[in-house]
Length: 356
Image (cartoon, rainbow, N blue to C red; front, side, top):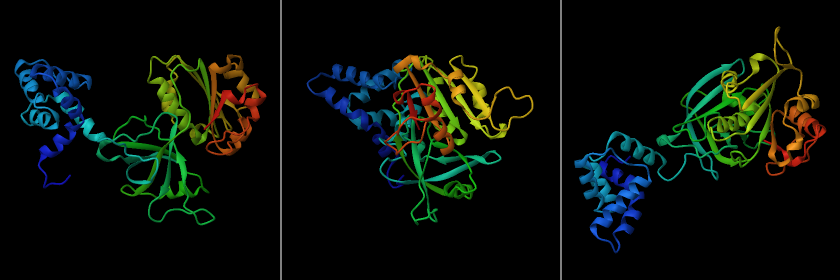
């Protein structure tokens, strides 16, 4: 913020988005019509204030002046309650754009590192001005290093896709759950980051356009860190009580300690719409889940019937070996490639499967 400019400048800027409707309201109308339109414009934005006769009178007077100036004067004269002040703070936060940009990399400061388990951590990045990231459900972002960034074997910058684990509409922060692989150039680079360092992010990259109740049932198959896009979709469905989609999740890991978001799965299972089945290569004594890999037989046992046709969808995300065994790999970001593996053997069609 330019300290040489008065606070009213910024208050007026926030109010500017209301000005068009107010200006239109003044054309060819009387003063009472102006006030009615002004009130409607404010109420339509859900920026209503408690009923107070004096406040209402002053509000109408300042609104009738029209545009940002009138609203700014109303603000300056104290005509804003706490709820409305909070709403307008959100408007200021967006300022007409999101933190991320799909066409360019932007640098973001690392705010916090939260160790998760023996080889994974949550990296919390600060989004400026309390903005939203701009991500949508079933979308990801891509990252590259800042400064001394990692290079691939051809000397080109390493760029990797990641899916945040906090909801897409979260403000001010973006959380990446990163599993560190010994040979992973990007994950090792991230492992060396310190709070205050920066990382370059670009997005969103939309993938599947999920719509509530588009399917009767969906299946979600994940392995290791491939669970993050699966979790993003689970969050979307669980947060919407109007979405009646039934969800079955098959999640494979090497050991119980490798299960990511374990505490969240325990909460999700309390929702009758969800069922989760864990698969472990190395199961502990007394393990109640499945052991070994996700096979054709497991798919047929747990996932929705292929007979549901277009009302069923299976989403898959995991390491290359698992993708090959379950569905076959994608050919590219825009080409799903042929469906093979356990899902094809179980009778699913390519149209019933989406590979993250």
